[in-house]
Image 1 (cartoon, rainbow, N blue to C red):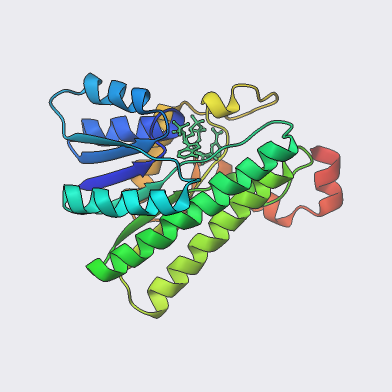
Image 2: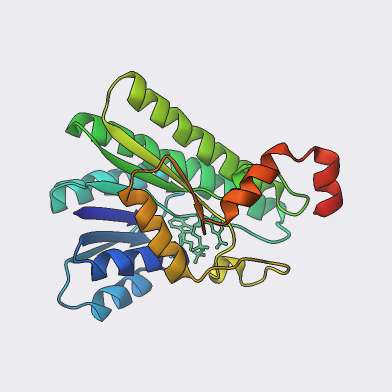
Length: 238
Ligand SMILES: NC(=O)c1ccc[n+]([C@@H]2O[C@H](COP(=O)([O-])OP(=O)(O)OC[C@H]3O[C@@H](n4cnc5c(N)ncnc54)[C@H](OP(=O)(O)O)[C@@H]3O)[C@@H](O)[C@H]2O)c1
């Protein structure tokens, strides 16, 4: 299986890369920090690991890199779009960066991925959204809104694939809290999973071609509640 992971340098993306590598898959890993990608490559000298520097904010370059990697490595079976940023109390610049990476960067890759798999006759797109997609919060409205976009976009791609029989599976991964560099500054986290545990559950969800998967699974219960909570109750709890 040939899998490309967008945003594989740290956290969930790195854990996913290492799990897929340990299962003997050929992986193509991307991210801005080339040094971190080289370290993963060096840690598994006998495995088929290809790396490429990519900043998804440079949307034209990123899409060209996707095409070049597909040509160079004989295509992909799965495209995992994991790259994302989130800030605590975001400044205006950080809010815009969140939209640039999580929304514009996501669409740049997901739109390319859909066209690629349509042309190929099928494939699997995986996007890492968040439980935050379900409702907003007083702390990071831009992050919640960006993930709501991601989940909605993926639902649209699934509907498109089903309506026009494009044979493209689309899996929306919605983690709760995972212990990664992104959440280092967070306070008040609960049900926190290690990146390794999260990666195991994500790979299981991908293998069973789930439409939507909560990571870890217990967050499914919270998701049900979050969907029905009235806003006044959210205001009291958060
Ligand atoms: N941790 C959680 O609790 C949690 C919960 C829900 C959802 N998520 C989502 O899970 C995904 C992974 O996050 P994480 O927690 O593992 O955080 P992380 O360790 O900070 O990883 C973020 C990844 O995104 C990449 N990235 C960021 N900006 C990029 C850009 N402009 N171009 C290309 N790659 C970029 C980073 O690589 P470079 O910096 O090297 O480019 C890194 O590999 C994100 O989409 C996040 O929103 C996380």
